[in-house]
Image 1 (cartoon, rainbow over the protein chains, first blue to last red):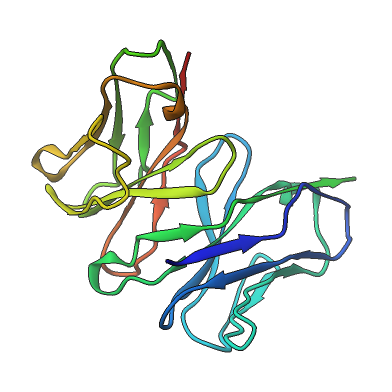
Image 2: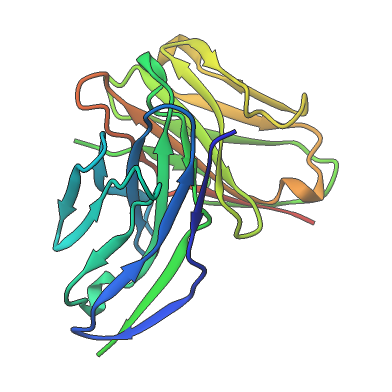
Length: 115
Length: 113
């Protein structure tokens, strides 16, 4: 079946450092890929997405490129802020039609950014 | 617009008891999903409603779990009887067909002792 593997955390960075969180996937067909973020005390929010190979999703300074050849969707940000401290989840959807919301998640990566 | 609301935010029950979790989706969202994160592991899909109908319940772990969505509005997830391994965070999400973005609630943290 489908699966998503994220780099294990926690990740601790200083403000303005470069961030990479690795994500690789296993899936049949052509899944859509997502990054979700969960800030403390809140629910998951969609951070960015990409629906086909070579697409780049971006939002709030974060970027991720859908790489089919390496089955990867690594999350990057050039300069992190304290407010980026959260749990980040990589996910895929391999269901068509009305089942697009059936997501397969990675295990989550805790990011802590210090001033 | 109000977001997805889940009740309660926390629940602590003893093994063998019954617990009912509630989810109020965003008004007008026909699609409602339940997910669960157990013991810091990955978040796993439980089931999907389209209005009041179960579209996909392939992720429901066993028959101790019962989900309903009365009138296609709010949904409940009942665990009866609860076991220790049911402890975790239960998330609800809703979406419209247009945009296809899932909106998640803050989750219910269930602890079974």
